[in-house]
Image 1: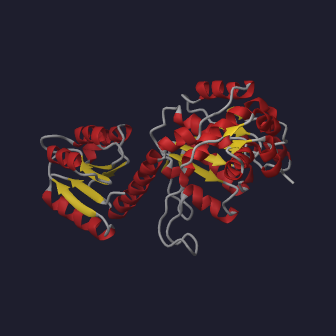
Image 2 (image 1 turned 45 degrees about the horizontal axis):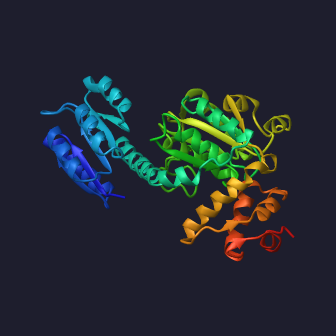
Image 3 (image 1 turned 90 degrees about the vertical axis):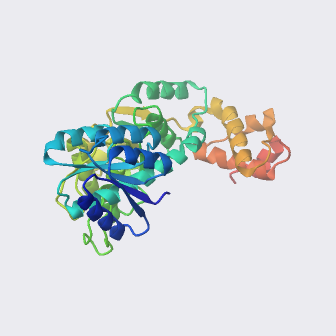
Amino acid sequence: MNSNILVVEDEAAISRVLVKILAEAFVTYEIEAAYDGQSAIEMIQNKDYALVLCDIKMPKMDGVEVLIKAKEVAPFTSFIMISGHGDLETAVETMRLGAFDYISKPPDLNRLLTAARNALEKKDLLVENTLLKQKVSKGYEMIGESEAISHIQQMIDKVAPTDARVLITGPNGSGKELVAHWLHEKGPRANAAFVEVNCAAIPSELIESELFGHVKGAFTSAVKDRSGKFEMAHGGTLFLDEIGDMSLSAQAKVLRALQEQKISRVGSDKDIKVDVRVLAATNKNLKEEIKAGRFREDLYHRLAVIIIEVPALNERKEDIPLLISHFSKQIAHTQGTQPKVFSTEAISALQSYDWSGNIRELRNVVERLLILGASEISVKDVSLFASKN
């Protein structure tokens, strides 16, 4: 990650103060200054900046022009706009153009530093997401020609361009995460962050902090302010995996976030507006969970605008030959080896299995066969190395 911050401000006194404050707060970053828009663009073209603080009214080129031109050459650089009272309407417009936030003059220093920290966090997240794009495109390919898979692909094509919330259901290992990735990849938010939260993997006492962030002192280990996943996903997609395992108190806060498009950090009563598309997934029957009092019915109806059901592998065994071929090539590429051929009998034997672990289990078996089997995987290899006994 780069470690440069640029202050673009034509008033020298204000510029010096901002540079000093940022240098003290972000000691690992190099803080630089530009005194007009044209100089700022030249600097951004020649150096990678993590964050730019940019005044709106400046000579030669105003802040709006700087933002537009900078985003063409540095799309992942975070921008915080600095506005006078008469510039507030313009400042709001800059957020539509891609600015992370705006600060009114004279700047509140705590507000400025909080915005800067959040902008840097989100910038790092966007870069990480972008670096993973190629892996995502290949790692999350939807393999299969069965009727069930064709139906899911058609649903994704229809739903992805919208902001509709989607509930993805299906057993463990069936590919619910893959569907969520494709809904994001094929939608208008594809270039923004895709933030995933596994609700089953986070202790119930920490889930609210993970989702909504916290302020310093909110609880014993809260030694500094921290952004939550909703803030990190602002402008992009938040994927709540295994949402059926979320605590009722966290469900209430998620419901409020969906209804009002704002959240508040743990330990704070300040509202933070968020623009997030929420996708959720579960391996549970949420209607049964509602009857048992473990899931909120009002939240279910908010999340389940569209429902996509991912079938178990046992329900689409005709896709197994394609999946075996795909996994063989994928695993061989990762290991730097040549993919192996599976005999017709070996494939038929694998098709006859009961795949209770679904796609994930099949991939593990293919990897085991590639490592332990002969140069051509035979039915004997399958009986020796793919047995579930």
